[in-house]
Image 1 (tube, helix red, strand yellow):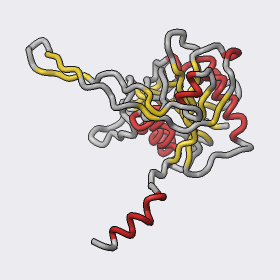
Image 2: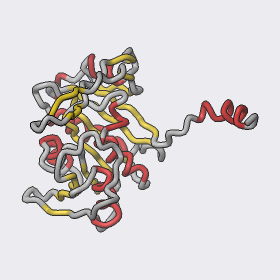
Image 3: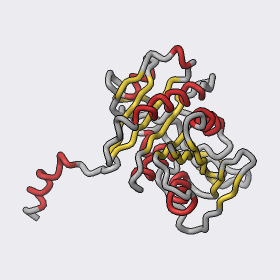
Length: 248
């Protein structure tokens, strides 16, 4: 299978190298990733600057842009034949619940789906050990089955893996997104010249994290696989909204 592999942690990230090493055993993999860490950029595109692509000693290609830029370049300009699958990861940290809104890792996958290709995002819920090989093996296990069980045309898979050895995983659960409490307030400080600066605080704690959620699966040693729709229309609200819109 032809695979376009990207990420948001940058072309030098350990998770990217680990996933490439595992995928390359079975697939034709082209790696196009940002030249720096782009965590939290979501689906941003670089519209105010030209994009440049450079091949690294590893054979990977680095782009001075976002994860979405990398997927666009790979599909529209760089790869001679369209990839059959877009894979993003392995992210250095979880992408659970509300995280998916901001995640560049998930954004690279959704960009692939916007362009008509099946796509998955893979994250390691890293604490201290960094078992990237576990997440890489899980991703390959799932990819092997996608040929017989293709994704719906408007969906991607968001895969989160506990940071444990592969043999200690309790299995895989299909989950829904949980939710976090509101993020902690921003941190106010000063730069060396006495000017006010602000940093984002910690993410909010889990609020909706019960059975069936991605948070619950990870907390209990399971891989979480959440199908995400790229069509954000709230269909359940359309009829009610139509009724009051007609009264305006």
